[in-house]
Length: 185
Image (cartoon, rainbow, N blue to C red; front, side, top):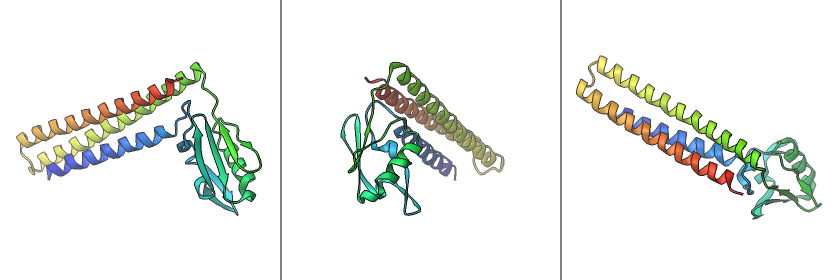
């Protein structure tokens, strides 16, 4: 029963780490990444449709994303959706495709983004610590209900702490990697 607590904690920590990775893919770095366009919805015949559902999206160069719609009639709608998405990038429409040129980030902007990344990492550390607290509360309840012994409680609490420490270390590694990517010129 108490092994379930540890397994559940590990699963929830892994989900949190995956959430952090997903969130950080949307953070703009100096190079073009099509992940930044994941949240963009195009009004396609009255239906909000993901950008990838109406066009092919490519990053042919490190600082350029090209969007080629499957129907030319959707070009204006795609451009409008990109402008409304507030990506900080000005779409250029040439009548056949849309180009999103990524200007190099200034030093100040890179530091700003790195700070945001660090803040996001801290939020996820708090989440992991809350997961630890929840697991420890379950263990206390099991101890109180005499479902586990005090020795088991102590041993499992140590395992929970090790899982938490490992999760926080992974958050630090993910954040450090993203900060390095952001600060790259």
